[in-house]
Length: 119
Image (cartoon, rainbow, N blue to C red; front, side, top):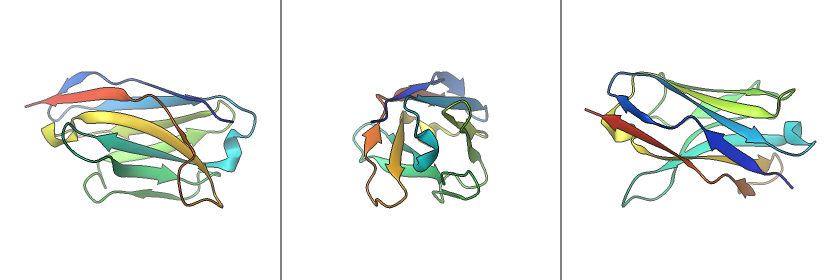
């Protein structure tokens, strides 16, 4: 069982930066692939970024590539999302999620944190 709690969301101006954090409970955090997703009002939830259990591999949605960076600290059971050059279209609730590397679907989800980018 893994519990996830996101933090760091707030209102920021376009062009600004923000760092989201996700704290995970459980002693097997390092066994999980960690991901960030987001959901804007009236839209479906979409993939943002993911990082392998070791942190050695990451991938990004095309819409955030080059602007966002995902990282993890297995000693602290945390995963972060550094967001730079924010755009109004990045406005959404951001969710942290976890899955075992053998699974395709994400098994655990946080409650979300709101990011609002003003123009």
